Length: 454
Image 1 (cartoon, rainbow, N blue to C red):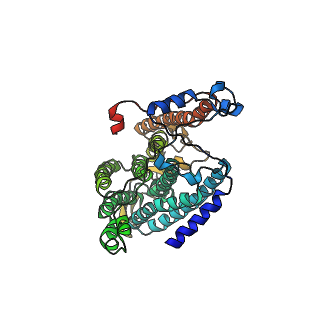
Image 2: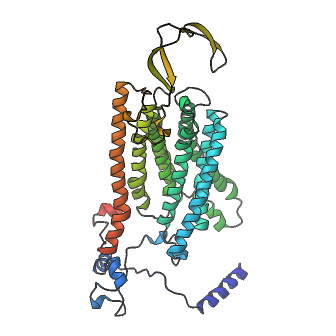
Image 3: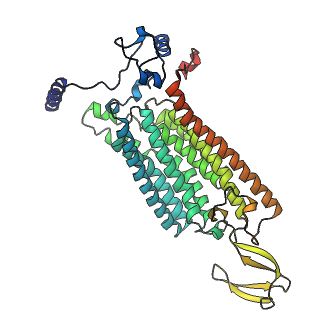
């Protein structure tokens, strides 16, 4: 230990002789009122900072520089080692981790496809394992390859990656690998059984594993008493670490899965209610009894969830709900005005999907059916939104009531898409333009004692 201290002291002495450019300056104030007064007085637009104009001469730094001031995050969330990284470096790192994440998503989807070929149970187990490993993998990618000035930005990056990963593996992969005519079939390898297994695993395994806290109990009861000194033993009793982003992904994953398959699996709403209610109480217990303190990260994750992912889940409900309503009865058979040929009339013996012989009786006045495509999601050119008018000529299969509900869902999806696009544009474009040309500082808290209590 003494040798390490001496090495660090030598490094400090060597670094003290070098010159480093200042990347950021943090200013502390005696009172909250003084901080707000300074931020309000020195608040200028990005354009004024670039042009070095727009403030009184007495407010210039060293008499000739316009300062770019902003309210920082909480001190515990500042990542000091990443403050001097350039924008180009940050973007390149983000592109690298995004590419790696996409490769991992494709790999996970392939594993789920192989599991679904065996059974819905195997598929549910695979999805659960992938969802459990995803936070650790994404955290490793972000910590190793990305630079973020604040802990909130880091957790937001993790949150986005984990959410997309879980949405794809939990909901989107199943609809891709399922043949259209097998969408509403019952059976061990079909979609409905896979959805049921996924919901049950989310309802049971996640809370149970969280309450068991295997890693925490091993640290406290096995590793802690065997530590070589008091300091190392105390470290074993700090509690498990958690991130707000991971907790949000559990919420949005269940919501997205429920909304995505709401039409063909409405029972998912009951599973979702039970899962979210149980998650609330288990998380509350863990927060008070098991987890250690986490850094204060601000409101970035909650704002992104509200503005992006919750809207995206609602959009999926309307858009894909229209396609699922349009797909009924999921048999790719369209009725015609002709009767069946006399060659088919009578009683026939056939083999069903289970290998059993069944008798089929066809009356002479039975209507003739032809093979047609009812999967609007795979129409070319694309049919968007799913509307009855996109049925192909002489291949109409929808009933009148079905056409009405498909139209309602389709146009509702367009309305939600317009609202979501407006929200995205407002957050990404309008706010950046406002920051470039307008003063943007606003007091984000109040003097109420309740605020400080919260």
